[in-house]
Length: 211
Image (cartoon, rainbow, N blue to C red; front, side, top):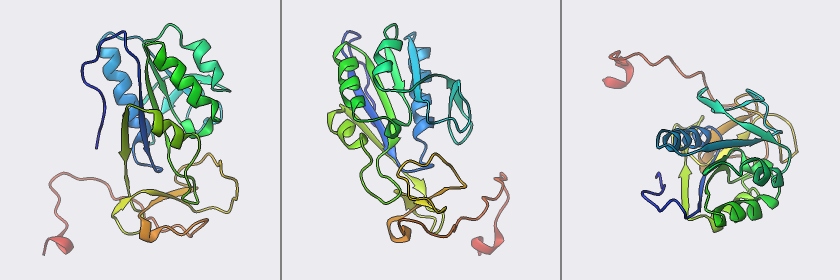
């Protein structure tokens, strides 16, 4: 369910959190909200942690290759200093920041900013991924997104690691993780189950499933 505010007086601030597992569309949703705010004439700044350099150093990029310009920070405290001119502050990959992000988000919202935060709510072992649980608790609006399980094709809530690595933070994508449903989730590491996604062709019937 998408849960975001409607009309709210411009002098008030609040926090929105978009959470979910890998490949659930969190960054894409963050970009969508940023674009809508920009169209509405609001000043928007997107921030991402320096840790996330998978696609670009100067843009925030979704797995579907949707992108917007962003600034990169090393610590959560830098966000307050670098976004003072913005009405809307978007923060991607929140799980890569430490718990100072909670105080930073509150500071920005109390200063009348709209704060939009996206991040993983669970790590590769299925445990709450700090600081996301605390951000979810203080947010006025929370959206939980889901991917499609690479094994069963059902709704996926977990991020299955498919490479040998015991670190909680491992910046990766399809080579390192798969979305999994609860009954298909086997932490800490499992063999890759996903198959290549076939090309989407309009109007072409799959006779094996249509019979």
